[in-house]
Image (cartoon, rainbow, N blue to C red):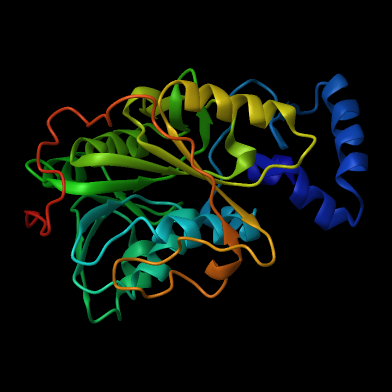
Length: 300
Protein backbone atom coordinates (compact mmCIF):
# COMPACT_ATOMS: atom_id res chain seq x y z
CA UNK A 1 0.00 0.00 0.00
CA UNK A 2 2.82 2.43 0.77
CA UNK A 3 4.43 1.75 -2.60
CA UNK A 4 1.12 2.32 -4.39
CA UNK A 5 0.02 5.43 -2.49
CA UNK A 6 3.28 7.04 -1.35
CA UNK A 7 1.92 7.31 2.20
CA UNK A 8 -0.61 5.50 4.36
CA UNK A 9 -1.95 5.91 7.89
CA UNK A 10 -1.63 3.28 10.60
CA UNK A 11 -5.39 3.30 10.96
CA UNK A 12 -5.82 2.45 7.30
CA UNK A 13 -3.21 -0.31 7.46
CA UNK A 14 -4.88 -1.81 10.51
CA UNK A 15 -8.25 -1.73 8.80
CA UNK A 16 -6.98 -3.38 5.61
CA UNK A 17 -5.09 -6.20 7.33
CA UNK A 18 -7.74 -6.50 10.06
CA UNK A 19 -5.45 -6.22 13.03
CA UNK A 20 -4.69 -3.71 15.77
CA UNK A 21 -2.72 -0.50 15.34
CA UNK A 22 -0.28 -1.79 17.97
CA UNK A 23 0.54 -4.77 15.75
CA UNK A 24 0.79 -2.59 12.65
CA UNK A 25 3.12 -0.19 14.44
CA UNK A 26 5.43 -3.05 15.41
CA UNK A 27 5.51 -4.31 11.82
CA UNK A 28 6.18 -0.81 10.48
CA UNK A 29 9.17 -0.48 12.82
CA UNK A 30 10.55 -3.76 11.46
CA UNK A 31 10.08 -2.63 7.85
CA UNK A 32 11.75 0.69 8.64
CA UNK A 33 14.75 -1.17 10.10
CA UNK A 34 15.05 -2.96 6.75
CA UNK A 35 14.96 0.35 4.88
CA UNK A 36 11.68 -0.44 3.11
CA UNK A 37 9.75 2.58 4.45
CA UNK A 38 9.97 5.56 6.80
CA UNK A 39 7.72 6.07 9.79
CA UNK A 40 5.80 9.33 10.14
CA UNK A 41 3.31 10.54 12.75
CA UNK A 42 0.46 8.09 12.58
CA UNK A 43 1.62 6.42 9.38
CA UNK A 44 4.37 5.40 6.99
CA UNK A 45 5.82 6.83 3.77
CA UNK A 46 8.20 5.74 1.07
CA UNK A 47 11.85 5.94 2.18
CA UNK A 48 13.86 9.01 1.36
CA UNK A 49 12.44 11.70 3.65
CA UNK A 50 9.96 13.24 1.20
CA UNK A 51 6.74 11.60 0.13
CA UNK A 52 5.61 11.57 -3.46
CA UNK A 53 2.13 12.74 -4.28
CA UNK A 54 -0.59 10.14 -4.60
CA UNK A 55 -3.25 10.39 -7.29
CA UNK A 56 -6.90 11.06 -6.57
CA UNK A 57 -8.03 7.39 -6.75
CA UNK A 58 -5.58 6.47 -3.99
CA UNK A 59 -6.20 9.55 -1.83
CA UNK A 60 -9.97 9.21 -1.98
CA UNK A 61 -9.81 5.90 -0.08
CA UNK A 62 -7.40 7.06 2.64
CA UNK A 63 -8.50 8.37 6.05
CA UNK A 64 -12.10 8.81 4.92
CA UNK A 65 -13.52 9.00 8.45
CA UNK A 66 -10.92 11.58 9.45
CA UNK A 67 -11.64 13.73 6.38
CA UNK A 68 -15.36 13.62 7.11
CA UNK A 69 -14.84 14.77 10.69
CA UNK A 70 -12.51 17.57 9.60
CA UNK A 71 -14.89 18.76 6.88
CA UNK A 72 -17.83 18.78 9.30
CA UNK A 73 -15.94 20.99 11.72
CA UNK A 74 -14.42 23.29 9.08
CA UNK A 75 -17.84 24.00 7.57
CA UNK A 76 -18.76 25.73 10.82
CA UNK A 77 -16.13 28.38 10.13
CA UNK A 78 -17.95 29.63 7.03
CA UNK A 79 -20.64 32.27 7.38
CA UNK A 80 -23.55 33.20 5.18
CA UNK A 81 -22.59 35.64 2.44
CA UNK A 82 -18.84 35.13 2.70
CA UNK A 83 -16.41 34.97 -0.19
CA UNK A 84 -13.76 32.26 0.23
CA UNK A 85 -11.22 30.29 -1.74
CA UNK A 86 -11.01 26.50 -1.54
CA UNK A 87 -7.96 24.66 -2.82
CA UNK A 88 -7.67 21.24 -4.40
CA UNK A 89 -7.73 17.99 -2.44
CA UNK A 90 -9.97 15.21 -1.21
CA UNK A 91 -10.46 16.86 2.19
CA UNK A 92 -11.46 20.18 0.62
CA UNK A 93 -13.83 18.25 -1.64
CA UNK A 94 -15.54 16.93 1.48
CA UNK A 95 -15.73 20.48 2.81
CA UNK A 96 -17.31 21.71 -0.43
CA UNK A 97 -20.10 19.16 -0.13
CA UNK A 98 -21.04 20.70 3.20
CA UNK A 99 -20.81 24.28 1.95
CA UNK A 100 -23.58 23.69 -0.58
CA UNK A 101 -26.13 24.66 2.10
CA UNK A 102 -24.59 28.02 3.08
CA UNK A 103 -26.67 30.76 1.38
CA UNK A 104 -25.04 33.67 -0.38
CA UNK A 105 -21.63 32.02 -0.40
CA UNK A 106 -19.08 32.70 -3.14
CA UNK A 107 -16.42 30.02 -3.61
CA UNK A 108 -13.35 30.59 -5.75
CA UNK A 109 -11.50 27.39 -6.58
CA UNK A 110 -9.00 25.77 -8.93
CA UNK A 111 -10.43 22.32 -8.20
CA UNK A 112 -12.85 20.58 -10.54
CA UNK A 113 -13.86 18.31 -7.64
CA UNK A 114 -14.79 21.27 -5.44
CA UNK A 115 -16.70 22.90 -8.29
CA UNK A 116 -18.54 19.65 -9.00
CA UNK A 117 -19.55 19.31 -5.35
CA UNK A 118 -21.12 22.78 -5.50
CA UNK A 119 -22.48 22.61 -9.06
CA UNK A 120 -26.11 22.14 -8.00
CA UNK A 121 -26.05 24.47 -4.99
CA UNK A 122 -28.48 27.17 -6.06
CA UNK A 123 -27.47 29.62 -3.34
CA UNK A 124 -23.70 29.30 -3.87
CA UNK A 125 -21.78 31.07 -6.62
CA UNK A 126 -18.76 29.16 -7.91
CA UNK A 127 -15.90 31.02 -9.60
CA UNK A 128 -13.17 28.91 -11.22
CA UNK A 129 -9.66 29.97 -12.01
CA UNK A 130 -8.13 29.53 -15.42
CA UNK A 131 -5.12 27.31 -15.97
CA UNK A 132 -4.03 23.92 -17.24
CA UNK A 133 -5.76 20.79 -15.97
CA UNK A 134 -3.61 18.51 -13.85
CA UNK A 135 -5.33 15.16 -14.17
CA UNK A 136 -3.89 13.44 -11.10
CA UNK A 137 -5.84 15.68 -8.73
CA UNK A 138 -8.34 17.35 -11.08
CA UNK A 139 -6.92 20.81 -10.40
CA UNK A 140 -6.14 23.79 -12.61
CA UNK A 141 -2.51 24.86 -12.30
CA UNK A 142 0.09 26.95 -14.09
CA UNK A 143 0.45 30.63 -14.93
CA UNK A 144 -3.15 30.90 -16.13
CA UNK A 145 -4.46 29.86 -12.70
CA UNK A 146 -2.07 32.15 -10.84
CA UNK A 147 -2.76 35.18 -13.03
CA UNK A 148 -6.50 34.79 -12.68
CA UNK A 149 -6.12 35.15 -8.90
CA UNK A 150 -4.34 38.50 -9.07
CA UNK A 151 -6.34 41.26 -7.47
CA UNK A 152 -8.68 38.85 -5.69
CA UNK A 153 -9.63 39.52 -2.06
CA UNK A 154 -11.62 37.07 0.08
CA UNK A 155 -12.06 36.45 3.79
CA UNK A 156 -10.72 32.89 4.13
CA UNK A 157 -8.68 30.31 2.25
CA UNK A 158 -9.20 26.60 2.94
CA UNK A 159 -6.25 24.46 1.88
CA UNK A 160 -4.92 20.97 2.36
CA UNK A 161 -1.58 19.44 1.42
CA UNK A 162 0.72 16.46 1.68
CA UNK A 163 2.41 17.37 4.95
CA UNK A 164 2.42 19.84 7.83
CA UNK A 165 5.19 20.68 10.28
CA UNK A 166 5.66 23.50 12.76
CA UNK A 167 9.04 24.22 11.20
CA UNK A 168 7.99 24.64 7.55
CA UNK A 169 4.21 24.82 7.61
CA UNK A 170 2.09 23.22 4.88
CA UNK A 171 3.83 21.52 1.97
CA UNK A 172 3.06 19.44 -1.09
CA UNK A 173 4.95 17.19 -3.48
CA UNK A 174 4.18 19.02 -6.72
CA UNK A 175 5.71 22.34 -7.73
CA UNK A 176 2.77 23.53 -9.87
CA UNK A 177 0.24 22.77 -7.16
CA UNK A 178 2.36 24.55 -4.56
CA UNK A 179 2.60 27.67 -6.71
CA UNK A 180 -1.18 27.92 -7.16
CA UNK A 181 -1.77 27.30 -3.45
CA UNK A 182 0.54 30.21 -2.65
CA UNK A 183 -1.51 32.43 -4.96
CA UNK A 184 -4.70 31.32 -3.20
CA UNK A 185 -3.17 32.22 0.16
CA UNK A 186 -2.25 35.71 -1.02
CA UNK A 187 -5.91 36.37 -1.78
CA UNK A 188 -7.17 35.62 1.74
CA UNK A 189 -7.20 37.46 5.04
CA UNK A 190 -7.21 34.18 6.99
CA UNK A 191 -5.74 30.80 6.09
CA UNK A 192 -7.34 27.59 7.34
CA UNK A 193 -5.43 24.35 6.83
CA UNK A 194 -7.30 21.03 6.75
CA UNK A 195 -4.99 18.12 7.61
CA UNK A 196 -5.61 14.78 9.28
CA UNK A 197 -3.24 13.64 12.02
CA UNK A 198 -1.20 11.39 9.69
CA UNK A 199 0.11 14.49 7.88
CA UNK A 200 1.44 16.07 11.06
CA UNK A 201 5.21 15.93 11.08
CA UNK A 202 5.39 14.96 7.40
CA UNK A 203 7.55 17.26 5.27
CA UNK A 204 7.34 17.26 1.48
CA UNK A 205 9.28 19.05 -1.21
CA UNK A 206 7.48 22.34 -1.84
CA UNK A 207 6.35 24.71 0.89
CA UNK A 208 2.92 26.25 0.27
CA UNK A 209 1.98 28.04 3.50
CA UNK A 210 4.59 29.04 6.11
CA UNK A 211 3.55 28.40 9.68
CA UNK A 212 3.35 32.10 10.55
CA UNK A 213 0.73 32.61 7.84
CA UNK A 214 -1.58 29.80 9.00
CA UNK A 215 -4.47 31.19 11.05
CA UNK A 216 -6.08 27.90 12.00
CA UNK A 217 -5.52 24.15 11.65
CA UNK A 218 -8.52 21.82 11.55
CA UNK A 219 -7.41 18.26 12.24
CA UNK A 220 -8.78 15.03 13.70
CA UNK A 221 -8.23 13.26 16.99
CA UNK A 222 -4.89 11.46 16.92
CA UNK A 223 -4.42 8.10 18.68
CA UNK A 224 -3.78 8.54 22.39
CA UNK A 225 -0.39 6.86 22.10
CA UNK A 226 0.79 9.17 19.30
CA UNK A 227 2.90 11.50 21.42
CA UNK A 228 4.70 12.89 18.39
CA UNK A 229 1.47 14.19 16.85
CA UNK A 230 0.61 15.88 20.15
CA UNK A 231 4.07 17.43 20.24
CA UNK A 232 3.66 18.77 16.70
CA UNK A 233 0.27 20.26 17.53
CA UNK A 234 1.72 21.98 20.58
CA UNK A 235 4.58 23.38 18.50
CA UNK A 236 2.08 24.76 15.98
CA UNK A 237 0.02 26.31 18.78
CA UNK A 238 3.16 27.84 20.29
CA UNK A 239 3.70 29.62 16.96
CA UNK A 240 0.24 31.16 17.06
CA UNK A 241 -1.83 28.67 15.07
CA UNK A 242 -5.35 28.06 16.40
CA UNK A 243 -6.00 24.32 16.67
CA UNK A 244 -9.47 22.87 16.14
CA UNK A 245 -9.69 19.12 16.72
CA UNK A 246 -12.60 17.07 15.40
CA UNK A 247 -13.12 13.75 17.15
CA UNK A 248 -15.92 11.21 16.96
CA UNK A 249 -17.48 11.31 20.42
CA UNK A 250 -21.04 10.43 21.21
CA UNK A 251 -22.99 13.15 22.96
CA UNK A 252 -20.53 15.87 22.09
CA UNK A 253 -21.82 19.26 20.99
CA UNK A 254 -20.16 21.01 18.11
CA UNK A 255 -20.11 24.40 16.55
CA UNK A 256 -20.65 22.80 13.16
CA UNK A 257 -23.07 25.19 11.49
CA UNK A 258 -22.66 28.29 9.41
CA UNK A 259 -24.34 31.57 10.14
CA UNK A 260 -27.41 30.28 8.40
CA UNK A 261 -27.78 27.54 11.01
CA UNK A 262 -27.64 24.85 8.35
CA UNK A 263 -25.72 21.76 9.42
CA UNK A 264 -22.35 21.33 7.82
CA UNK A 265 -22.92 17.57 7.52
CA UNK A 266 -24.91 14.66 8.84
CA UNK A 267 -22.38 13.77 11.52
CA UNK A 268 -21.68 17.29 12.69
CA UNK A 269 -23.56 16.77 15.94
CA UNK A 270 -21.06 14.09 16.91
CA UNK A 271 -17.98 16.26 16.53
CA UNK A 272 -16.16 17.97 19.36
CA UNK A 273 -14.04 21.06 18.97
CA UNK A 274 -11.06 22.13 20.99
CA UNK A 275 -9.47 25.48 20.21
CA UNK A 276 -6.04 26.67 21.26
CA UNK A 277 -6.39 30.49 21.14
CA UNK A 278 -3.85 32.72 19.48
CA UNK A 279 -1.44 34.22 21.97
CA UNK A 280 -1.56 37.60 20.26
CA UNK A 281 -3.52 39.60 17.69
CA UNK A 282 -4.74 37.64 14.70
CA UNK A 283 -2.29 37.74 11.86
CA UNK A 284 -3.21 38.60 8.30
CA UNK A 285 -1.65 37.50 5.06
CA UNK A 286 0.35 40.39 3.60
CA UNK A 287 -1.69 42.28 1.07
CA UNK A 288 -5.00 40.76 2.14
CA UNK A 289 -6.58 43.96 3.33
CA UNK A 290 -10.03 42.94 2.20
CA UNK A 291 -10.90 40.76 5.19
CA UNK A 292 -14.57 40.07 5.64
CA UNK A 293 -15.50 40.79 2.03
CA UNK A 294 -18.93 39.60 1.09
CA UNK A 295 -18.26 39.24 -2.64
CA UNK A 296 -15.41 38.04 -4.80
CA UNK A 297 -13.66 39.77 -7.66
CA UNK A 298 -14.53 38.11 -10.95
CA UNK A 299 -11.64 36.18 -12.37
CA UNK A 300 -10.43 36.87 -15.87
